[in-house]
Image 1: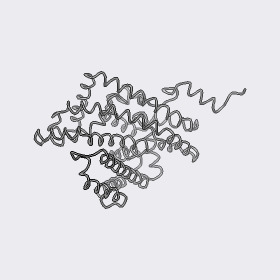
Image 2: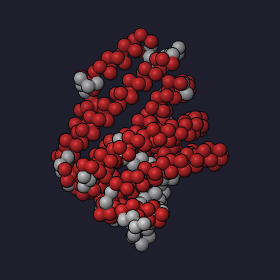
Image 3: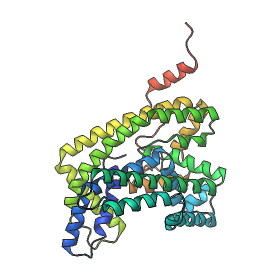
Image 4: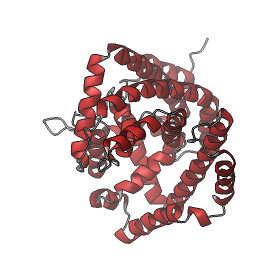
Length: 362
């Protein structure tokens, strides 16, 4: 993943909120920017980013990404999902969003949030206390967790076992494109119950380290976004084309990075720490897999089907990559962090794996 890809993802929502006021007076936009710098909005953005990354850690984010890709005929047909099935899935997702106020799973959280707003004025009021902020964002987090869980349940209930397996194979194929690896994707390799349990234990054991790494990532992005807000100004005013918006945002990101070498240094340190954690997690998970499962995983990454290649190419573009996943000769190129035998997994790891399976006699 390129250095600016996570930044672009993080800032797209911010840019949308700012550009939504394009037709308002400049004074209104200044008020909007002031609110964006408020402690409450800063915390809201931290929460949004944390929940987004957490959804991939728990496996929900990748599944929901695949559902969005069902709108592309080649991907949908590749997974074996009919147009009717895809539409029903989309309608079910929309129905959850439209009827949250009547859903008994959301109602207690909404009631508690309503009481907090009426008693304190809410987190965005001028005299909002730390306690109010903490309570509000705890409730917001609970709401998002329920939403992601319900949406993921719809995916699992709506797709047949062979379709779900292809979705998880897709997740393995794009492992190198995502900053988070979730144990759930390895179910596509026909794990035993014992293997599933081992992977869950590894995830639980490493979660504190993941959260610590995530906090560093968020700190880095928050510093960058402050400069981004100042540089954005009215540059998105009147721009409705999403591709043009993306180009403007990437140009601002590039300019900020060129003018602030300290930001580049911090991002580099953050990415290196993240890569160390991800590799540690991957290696521990790989230890659970059999040689046959490792070989199958390598095939999914090195030789994905055409519909997966097209989807990965689109995702790379959206995430800020300007390199094509297909070489000039037409050969498929796995991502820069992808796994294939001996690269980037060190030879020492493969040797240790072999020795653990067939220890030398004393």
